[in-house]
Structure formats: C-alpha cells, structure tokens
Amino acid sequence: MCSVYIEVTQELTHKNIINKYIRFPDTPAARQAVSQCFYRKYGIPGVVGCIDGSHFKIVVPPKEEEYLYYNCKHYHSLNVQMVCDDECRILNVNPKFGGANHDSFIWENNLNTYVQSLHQNGEIVWLLGYSGYPQSPGLMTPFVDAESNNYNEKHMRARVVIENTFSRLKNRWRCLDKDRVLHYKPVKCAHIILACSVLHNIIINFGVEDTEENIGLQFERRMVESDQISYTEREATSDLIRGRIRDQLARRLL
Image 1 (cartoon, one colour):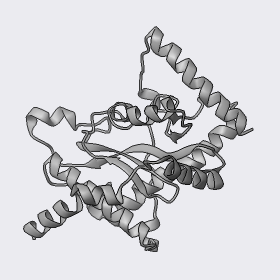
Image 2 (spheres, rainbow, N blue to C red):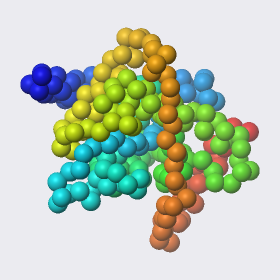
Image 3 (cartoon, one colour):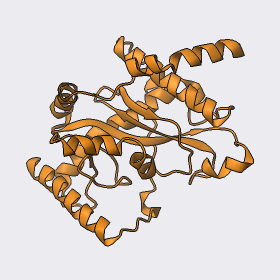
Image 4 (spheres, rainbow, N blue to C red):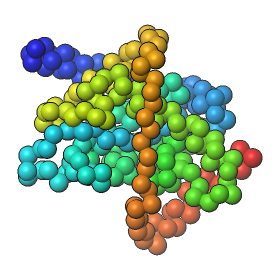
C-alpha cells in the first residue's frame, strides 16, 4: 500500500501533470475569459481569481523546525495558499509554507511579483482577498469602513468561492479534513495536498458533481483583529496609491 501511495503521489505531482491541471491564466485572453466569468456572476470587473490560505493539520515535525509549523490556532499545520476561479477550479497552489507564516507573507513570496508585473505591463486585473492581505494594485481587499457597502458586499459574495474551494477539497479527500491529521513529514504532506488539488481540478474538468455528503461547507473564520501591521512612511505612501485604485473600482460599482 505504501509503495502504491508513493507511486500515485509522484505521478500526480509530476511537473507536467501540475502544469496541465493547475494553471494560472497565462495569457491576456485566458485572463479575460476568467474575468468575464467573475463579472457575469458577481459584477466586479478585472477579477482573475480569489486568493486565501487554509491550514492543513500535520503531526508534530522534527523539533529543530517545529516553530515553523505551529500556528496561531495552537496546532501544527501547513498554511496552504490557493487561487481559484469562479467554478472553484484551483489556478495556483502553494503548500510549502508552515502554519506559522501569515497569509500576507506567503502572498509576498509567491504570486505578488507576477501579478504586479501584469500591472506594470498595463493589464488591469486583480485578485480578491480578505482584509488580512495588503491592499495593492493586483490584490483588492474589502474596505474596513461600513460606508462602502456595495463594493464590500460584491467583494464578499465573490470571495466565498475560495472558501467553497477549500471546503470541497477537504470534504472530497478526507485525509485533508479539518478533523484529520496528515501523519507524514511536512514535505510529503505538501505532496499529498498538491496531488489532491490535481485530482480536485480533474473532477471539475470532467463535470463530476459533488454528492450531498460533500456539500457541507465549513468556512474558516479569520482573526484579523489580532494582526498588527507596521508601515514605514514609504509604505504608507504606497498604500495610499493602492487605496486609490480600490476607490476607483468601488465607484464603478455604485
């Protein structure tokens, strides 16, 4: 059984397989197609995906690296960041970071540079993320004030799709369920999550419907209030510019 598991996992996480089934839209036409789907469903222009992180429980890792995996919820995990489209298809997945890492840190060290490069080339697209992420030209977060309700409500309805993606993934593959623990080293756990993500997309591509048992969506709640972010003067100026982009988007939704 162990040899079969190793063989299947290795096949599913082969670079060619991953590139075939988990692909962030890599051309302007592909990004426009995703954006149009989001706009038709949720009324927000320019959206090429929703982003979030979710914790996947693992056993206690070796002592010398345990601190990397002990999260704010007081258990050991991988904090897996994903981007999905409007159909809960996974467009990008990064299972390499331990649970001690915040979502914003993973974003900065994963997709941020690529999404920023799209803006620098004149392409006005963005991801939707919760308020724990830093507002930027390529990542739209909700307003913290209650006056921008129309934008926030549309943002919230659209962003539910990434929560649904995690829920469907964990309910399909029960080894990933919130009440289960992956009993392997972190690297192997990451491979299992990646393999399940590939299978998740294959199921969507072939139009296999969720059973009633798998639809019980379990949304994770954020404790953003406890996150403290300090800014330098330069970062504050940059955030002002980023905020103006979000303001412009919000005005378009009025």
